[in-house]
Picture 1 (cartoon, helix red, strand yellow):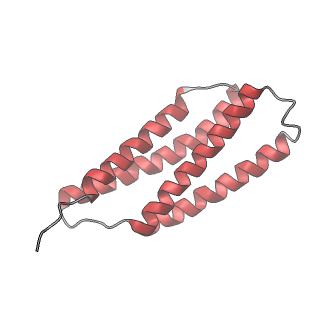
Picture 2 (cartoon, rainbow, N blue to C red; picture 1 turned 45 degrees about the vertical axis):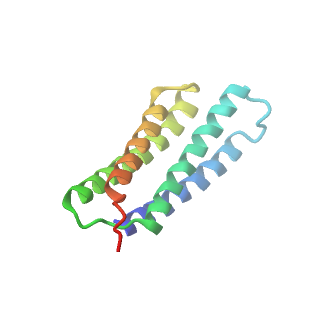
Length: 131
């Protein structure tokens, strides 16, 4: 699972750089567009970076726990994070280029990443043993 997060995190980071370049090419005179749209674009763009960093962090530090209920929690958390990345990328495209305003898609992406991190926290933290 570590490698899946690491590879996916690198891919999402590449998407982040591509979307940044696309924004620069598509809107070279950024001060001519409405500031609300510019803020929307930049925040959705940063959400993609946020998602990539979560995957890269898990790719570097994830330790799968031996207990089956913890592993299930970790796998479920990872699934939520993969879905979250897709939602955040889709929110960038839909909210910025199709609608030009906020929708619930980015909110669901953030909430899904919160659920994924919460499940990883529940499955990954274990009690300290004294000895």
